[in-house]
Image 1 (tube, helix red, strand yellow):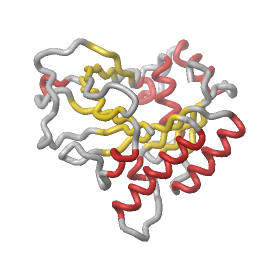
Image 2: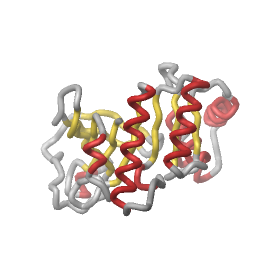
Image 3: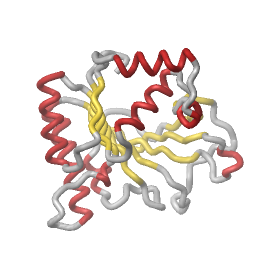
Image 4: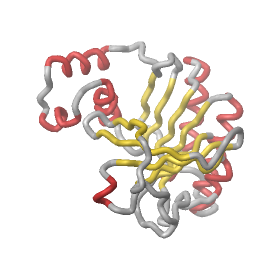
Length: 219
């Protein structure tokens, strides 16, 4: 968005209001201000500016759940606005063809997003839940279909050492280097991550770890 590219978010995880609040936090509104519903003059100015800005190249949809409807809207927006980047959050919440079972349904969703990205020459980011073995939940084909894959997980098994640190690892990259990793620190006040130096406490989570993570497939 900051580079001027038109982007779109198709969210089945959060509604438009929640996404709007997070965008405001990224721009400088403290997340606790939303809880208290009390804002500083500066925060109020940020909220007003974002709410009244009709030219921001970002569109958010929270009313589409079927993959065919989502793909049709992406095609239309690509024609109308020149959409370059699309986020579909997240794969397991998107409905597909249920006739051949759940695994085939999820695989079909991932494949349609892959084909659409290739046809329109755009970037589609499709977050996916992981199971306890650190694999994409409900369909291994998600990893097969994507061009790049990032795994985001806790950087340490020890919750005391964790403190909002997250390991980001490139596990697949068809057009470049893979197996790279870095550590990011999460700041809850503005829902942001910043890269930090790795310490001895930061480890690659073992496959048997049952922690919750997400894997991002970049089609």
